[in-house]
Amino acid sequence: MAPGQTVITAAVKNTTGTQAVEVVPTLSGVVTMMWTATDCSQHNAGCAGRTPWVYAASVTVTQVGSRIDGTWGRLSWMTGSVPFSGRIRADGSMDLSGARCSLDDIGRGTLFTLTDWRMQREADGVYRGRARHIQENDCNGRASSRLVTDYVVQLRP
Image (cartoon, rainbow, N blue to C red):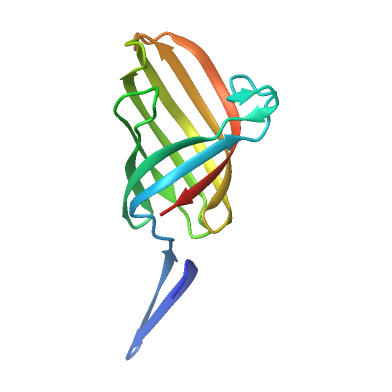
């Protein structure tokens, strides 16, 4: 009926059984993802002074049970789409990760690795979470920056 956890019990003659079930929100489809840093003092948070930039991307999500897979992108400064995978829980929280080597706006190859993005659901389509990500110049395996940034994320159909 709704996202959450429950236990189903069945009985036939002298035999009974139970099964725990977790119903998770559905995210399948194409949504717009907008995110802003919550603290402009964080390294590379994406701010103009004390004002956070609003980033936006188109996100395509497929979902089987609690597993979600998809791509996000086409940002103006990065070609292609970045794949991600993870899981969604009954409370709507998500853990995501993914990586892609992409060309930036002047043709440099850069590997963006989202190693961990934990998002807690605050309201319908609104999440708050901490992203851990690594940016490597020239896709050569040498990390040029390791970032931990707190974001507010909005997903809209």
